Structure formats: C-alpha cells, structure tokens
Image (cartoon, rainbow, N blue to C red; front, side, top):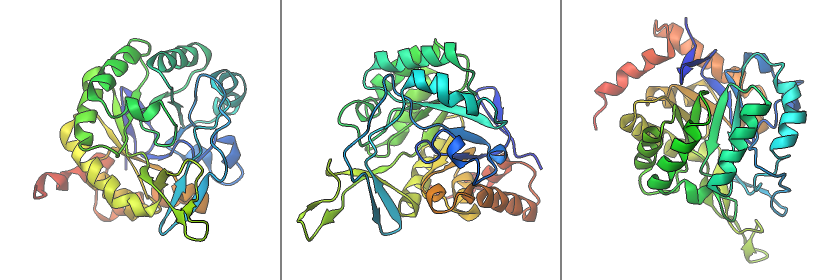
Length: 305
C-alpha cells in the first residue's frame, strides 16, 4: 500500500495533515501524539510582525462545532525562524508554513524571509481567514487579485505553493482556477465559515468582533461539496478540510477528489485523531483492495452531476 501524495513535485508520506491554528508549532503536541506519523504539519499562521490576536473570549462552542475569533495570534516571522523552527526542523514529516498578510507586500516579504531563513517543505498561503478586521479575506474573494498575488509568490520559490481558500463566496471554483492560473501547486479548502452566536441573556453576540469562524463536524458537508467542486475545476491536487474526526469523514473528502486532508478542530477533542483517521483510511483501502489514495478517485467519475 502506497500512502504517499505528491504536490508540486514533492512528496508527503501520507495524506493526513494537521490544520493551521489547531496544532500550534508542533512542539505543543509532541507528548500527546506521534508527530512523526503525520503526513504534514501546517503551522500556525505566520505574519510579518507578531500579533496579539483578538479580544477574549475567542472561542465559543456551538452544536457540532466551534466558533473561533483568534485573530491570527502568532509570534511573527522572525521569531518563527529563530525560535519555533528549531523544533520543526527535527521532525521527519513535512512542515508547511502557513503565511498570512494584510497587504500583498506583506505576503511577499514573509515568503522571502522564510525562503532565506528556514527550510520548510512548502507554503500554505492563507487568503481566507474570516476573523481579521482587514486583510486576508479581501485577498481571497477576488480571482484577479488571487491570480496576481500567486503569480508574484510563485517567482519567489520553487517549493510547493498551496493556496487556502475561503468558503464565504458565491463560487469557490472560480477562485481555485485563478490560483491555478497564477502558478499554485495545490488548493486547501475550506477555511471556516462565518458564524455568530448570540447570548440571549446579555442580548449581544458572545464574540467581541461579533462573528467568527465556524469549524468542526457541522461544516463537513459544506467542505466535501466545495472540495468536489474545486476538484472538478482544477487539475492540481486539492486538500480537503472541515469537520474530519475519523476515517469515514476523511474518506468522504478523498472520494470527492481530494488528494490529502487536514484535521483541525478534532485535534482539540482528541489529539490522537490524526492516527485514528489514518488508520481508518488504511483499513478502507485494504478492504477495497486498493493500493494508493488516488485509487479512491475512480468512483467520482461515475457520480451523477
């Protein structure tokens, strides 16, 4: 059985990654999970300068989900290179740096600094965070802007360039095509959905910024549907994200066309979720007498459109 996945000419040992913002910088989970068994760690978002993040509370539970308004709290690119990458450089799984900016110039500068300062496997460009007052989401909703920015980023690196898209648009396939035309090697979809929880007692939203990003099992059907649409629209690999807690959840994305998946909110519930998911994928492949993850795509061609 060959579990490897190729993106942009480089290989992941298996299709199971941990989503940005849910696994810190890797070292936070090293006592809880076999980090070496992961296909990839997608790091906490890296911005040009350190960010303190949004006001508290930043998290609120919802039925079958979690609403967050973290605000891209992180140590900034210099501290990532000089401090956080020390541990990440020791792990055998792929390390994909998640990059977030407020302007196109910031995205470019962060990538330049990462290229010069540390040897990551590749980059996931976050054009889709819904809880920053200005910046990421604006980039991720305009196909012309996406294509232009990806094209400029492409000139800076030969490493895999994965574009993370927002679901909070009319047609995600149009954005995926723009990223592909700009030179992206892969697409991550989806990021969180915009949501709100109102406290009936106080008669106001729980989160200080009113809305946040909804994740967890509640969004899985949306994630699977959007992954399918993107896979139909582009020829580059797609990484499915949203509500994956077990092997069956992951297989829905893989059967819909995804080449790999990421686990997010489930890491908070059970740090061993990635191991459970990977085992579930392996068990299914064995039962179906399949030898690669790509073999799962054969059924998609017969689906009624």
